[in-house]
Length: 194
Image (cartoon, rainbow, N blue to C red; front, side, top):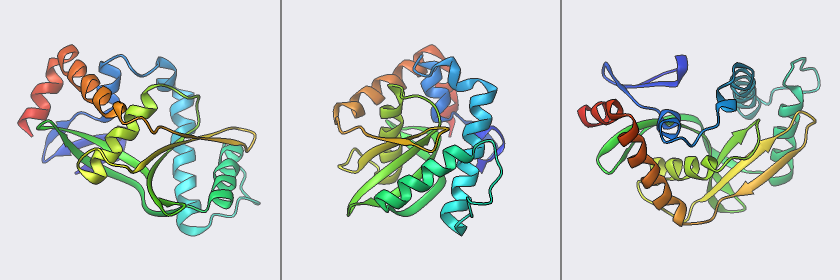
């Protein structure tokens, strides 16, 4: 069960660590990502991009401090015409017998190839490739040839599409997962009890 507040994940009443908690515990996520301004902007862009994808939100009349980032999303959609079958889907994922929660921004097809797509309003970071691995594992249950894409949206309506094709990222993700459990033993207790 997924609780929207704080992206908290639960199995029954038992809290399950989130992917972000794991990446933070392993020292992968920059403190900038946790600044309130970045979190508020990212949350608002995700919310409005979902409305755009589901209902065709009219951006011409939209008055919002994140309008530029949404114009970037619309520009990406228009140019690449992805076919989504997963939109903002929370999931529980089991890796090496241990459970964590994550939310897949988008998944579907791009140019007739399966893909996952993370929407970002900040700058590129190494952990984005690892996040893509977790999302592939969530959807496919194992490493696969599904494309791992990140779209970096900018305030001026531009965007940058980055693909993370290196299969070694899956091994790196497993190492980060193990590091997080060593750094924060309470995470290990949570994931083993579930």
